[in-house]
Amino acid sequence: MNMPWRAVDPLDAKAFAEVKTAAIFDCCKWDPQVEDVCSMSPLPIVLTPAAWRELVDLAEALAREMAEAEAAVLRAPRRLKTLGLPWRLRRRLAKPANVVSPTRHLRLIRFDFHLTSEGWRISEANSDVPGGFNEASGFTKLIAERYAELRAASDPAEALVRAIDRRIGRPGTVALIHATAYSDDRQVMAYLARRLKRMGHKGLLAAPDHLIWRSGKAFVATGAGQTPVDLIFRFFPADWLAALPWRCDWGPLLGGSLTPLCNPGLAIICQSKRFPLLWDTLSLELPTWNALLPRTYDVRAIQSRGDGDWVFKPAFGRAGEMIGMRGATPCFEMAAIEKSVRRYPQQWVAQERFNAVPLRSAIGDVFPCIGVYTLDGTAIGAYGRIAEKPLIDQSARDAAILLPKAPVSMTASSEVVGDHGRH
Image (cartoon, rainbow, N blue to C red):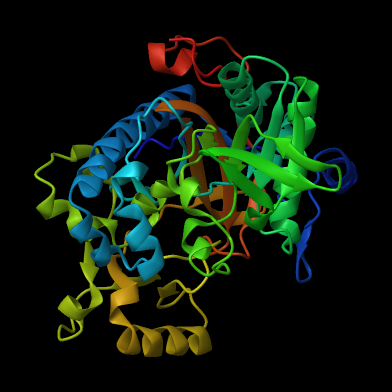
């Protein structure tokens, strides 16, 4: 197998300490450690130009197919029950008002790629609230500056704020809606607010219950009154919306808002790990998804079978939490996962396990995950993580994704990476 990456030496301790400090203060990277381990890696992932072009093409094909599948599900809302969504959310999504024009809102997705013995595979699509911009843009730039012969693959935060700027068309106000009690979410919003400010926009950090709706348009309640909003960047998971108090009007966030959204909450449809269970009912060809996503089953269909090396995944999860993979998940966690699978099978799926290929480096074998962002179907950048085991969870470290500086022949789709909307 031709490796899609090449090994480089990691940064030395002094240089990496300087990068970490800059990441904390300049890139709002406020969670530099997970327990006693640094959450950032001194080792970058250096892709070959051909590998990067291939990932761009695959991600854009996945995004096109996802849009078709999402529309097909909304046309037959009875299928929503299969996805494991809360009933309040299913009821709201079934309303025709949430089937909106695809040009009204921005659609941001991150596809997580892994190299396997059979080529590239994806573990999931983060179609609801993809994060990682602090690391994919800020931290990556800091690492790239330390390698004279390398460059950042892209700057997805820059591409995102430029797309927002074009959508608003003038200096405006962007509501950055998130779970305000979580510092790891807050840091993403604070970083994007800084990037928006450079473009002449004001970023308001707020929670869903700070929004006030008038005739489908959004305002944010502030100490100065009610501020009109020109665009909403939603970083609050759609499945959490159903748990908000009844007095909170979150329905427009699903897609019916006249104020542009990034992302509309209907993105939760393809975020569910149970999404593949609907494929046979959609009368659609999804060749890229079928080729790249491991075969996925309702856990009730495989419980009576002893064959197969299954990975158990909750329908909705964050940062690799509650993923059961024998040999990679600690025994006590695996026992708790298997118990939940038996009690709540409608909230889980079983996926066939792929054989991940490690990157052999000076710090040992590591398993990379390359998350490629698409915005309205066009690739805009990548977010890298590495782990010492073939499971990317909360213990995985952020890794810069770099490319050689030497000029290369680019495809049409590759040329637009980092400058969304040029084609």
